[in-house]
Image (tube, rainbow over all chains, first blue to last red):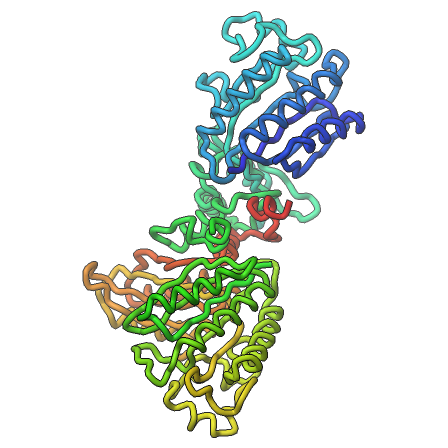
Length: 297
Length: 297
């Protein structure tokens, strides 16, 4: 069983503090820290770790212990919006684990954080049953500085913990979500208006696919434009469907697709779904992938 | 490093003999026996095992020891053509290993077999530099019964071992090849002539793609026809190219593709290549597949 967890922490300028948090994660048996990156202008660090539910839970609590002791949001400045010392903790199902199990894990960890560190916890995305609490942006609006006022409203009572923010550590947002795919499609044109129109056509916020965020950009050095996307649930809004609609919308403007690119990681199931669609493969099972079979045996 | 080896043995009727061979394979440290299937009418068994080069080599020699001691081709009957007690031994690169390393392994194992068991060995496919010895069918033509006469010809001197067959164990064919993909495309028609024409258009033997074997069949119960294929090198003749040509050839007869199917296992790289082609993904690297990254870390 493999769960990915990507805690975002409000500290990106003191390397010794970040290193201490990374060490705390690495010290947990059965956890692998795949990546740790800090951004000084955001004053924020992102850790990527994987392990079983129990191992990942222990690592997150160890991280909180360090973060709450060493980060004070009253003196924290940075470009990135944040509401807590440990700002966001998403759990992502990778292998041999369901979304429901990741939701249960988010709730268990959320309750433990509130209990041990007296930090109020908001559940988000798949872990939240409240439509007003699904989106991270909605929960984080007003940031740390606005938390006291926000939490005074009954509709912003936290899911776990005290009804007012922790003085130095604020509040934390904990949840479960699908792996996110950063996907760009480059168009064989320099017409930014075409990229922007297509982005508007496919993103949820303006009537497009539910699990697509998109924007149009100019790639100045190459003289072309790009539809830049985040696909937040590749099972429900698959890559190939987004690609085909972008292609069709571009055609309507007399424009063709030059190429696409996947930025960073992609689950193999998302690529397999594209192969199945285009090759019209019926009755395909993940066990038919040689590598999956070898890992089972 | 993971190499797959699929030895074919001329015994499919005496379960205790087959079980003894399977045990000999399993007894080797670092080898996993993924599958063992016997066919009584073929009087033949196929073992599928994986491991490092050293582990797989040891397993093949252990299998030979059992097979040569318990199989006598002078009294063996079966529908499937065969030339040896251990008839064919292909090595297939799976992960962290090149084809060149599998060729080297085939040569090392071939030499060891000849040395230890006095069985003449023919190299085939990628392990053979001789164009007349690439195809298994060419080497096996005439079968065990024709071996004495065949080996009398200078052009059939073996790559390793004695210049005449082992009295009871015949000769063995050892080599390296790419994973084979069994791939079928079903057409939305009952016209067998269309399936046969398309099969002829795409298979190497009649002028088609180099690494495609194909035939047209009727699926009587469904009232449709099928182009049934073996893709013997998915890197050089990829699935998507074969699919697109079949689709185009079918169109010319006013026929469309109903569906396709992958029978058994497929390497994930073969599916990823299809996703890359249709989604026009540029600069994609295998390390971007989440599961690959997790296994490296």
